Length: 160
Image (cartoon, rainbow, N blue to C red):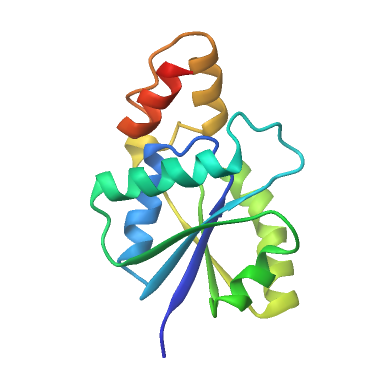
């Protein structure tokens, strides 16, 4: 039986912390779906199609192996996507207790709704302080975000 997992996120933009989690998860599962999801409580910097494109390029540039599928999902429950592709696991990167407190109720509901388990992965300590919102703020004020994001994202943000 194939082990299929989904790494969901807004990836607005993708960070090196995201890539760290994706890379490690790709080594644990036979197939990994990296899913750009629409978060109605956030105002996005990048359109979903651009986030998908930057993720694909960043994953390719990082040499992340295995079967990795990048897709988007904006209507319906995350567990609907997971069950549609045969995934039994959601992989979530967590940086702090705040993330744990936010993610735990969702993990419980996802398990009850569809039997989909959630695995929490701790980031590499070098990236634990970085969030997409921090990157957006630094970039909007003209700061250098290259230490926090893949090269493709840094180049894209510099042009924007």
